[in-house]
Length: 174
Ligand SMILES: [Ca+2]
Image 1: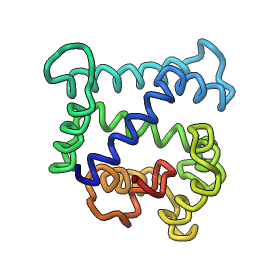
Image 2: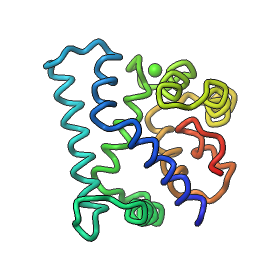
Image 3: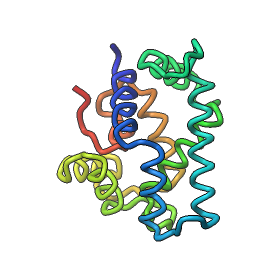
Image 4: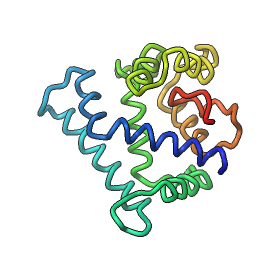
């Protein structure tokens, strides 16, 4: 199994643990948005688009489940032409960015990153190490555009040291 496939499987497993509904609730709670506000609706509808897109884009045999092989095949396709993602993959990327940018100021700082990683089961020291790597010791401002570049690397790069590998807080994929 190649490295890109291994990485996407790790992400799938952590996404399942951290179910989409759960993350939308947490996302809204973190920001102090109440139950029926417009922002909560926007978050939910973004996640529904991710979920629908995932099912229609990945569930090739249409059995209502996305298997590990289907998931890998879909990201493999993405990695061959990352400039033309499926629409839901872009929603997914934006959702993940917004999830981590807790302050909403358009960049991910170390404290925000470490908090979200810890909520998702990554040890604090590993998350801090991951942040240092992709922010090049805090010298790179992790804006949405920067995150989008790392996002492509996460799914496409076979280089174990590519900085994009570290955007979910893990520093090894063994
Ligand atoms: Ca921020």
